[in-house]
Image (cartoon, rainbow, N blue to C red; front, top):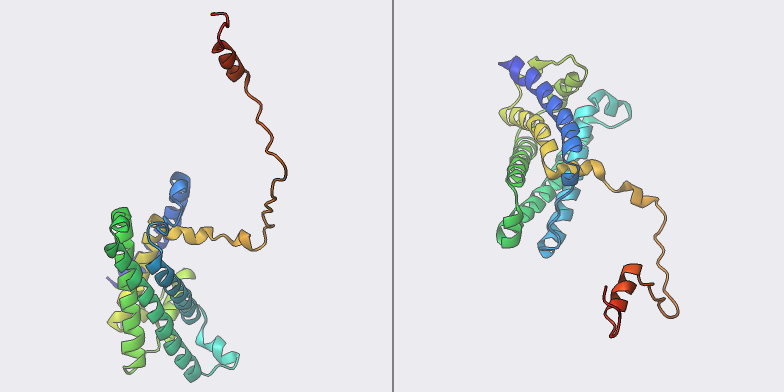
Length: 249
């Protein structure tokens, strides 16, 4: 069972993640958007969307730092383990609360506004449920275990297992004794990656970065009278035929 959960499942989810994006791009490019509902409701969105996205950026950055950067590297650059732990816990708590607050507003917005509720698809509901589950598990691990509890050093176990998956030498033994909430969070993370290509999250890969360096669009005012548009030959023939005394053809 450990082999299935900690070796087979991650590779299966990663395969679906890659193949799903290829399939979506080839068969649903017109659906490769955010499916924004800003025109239907903007008051709650103006608060919920920035909170969610800023919190998500912080959470993703914290996960990348904790899972991809070994403890030996942070110690080598002069960051003590205690300082790293405090920064990770408090930073994760603050950004996690921002994400949760934004997510609650975005979900509530779907139920409060009838037009948006009718526009919400089944996959949107699945996505919001998955985000809520991941946020709950993540906040439980951060706040209940590390901030209020005795703490758990995931960098010596879960982070090593995570990197070993991408080195194609998975260390499933490191996950056996991990706390249950961390195990569920890790499983949920890979399942979330498998769900990603089939949701509106694909818009992440189409971020409008070109707007940062593309030239400005110049609008010039038209001066003088607007030139008349020449009539087409068909319109001229039709107007001539309608004049009194015109020969009937």
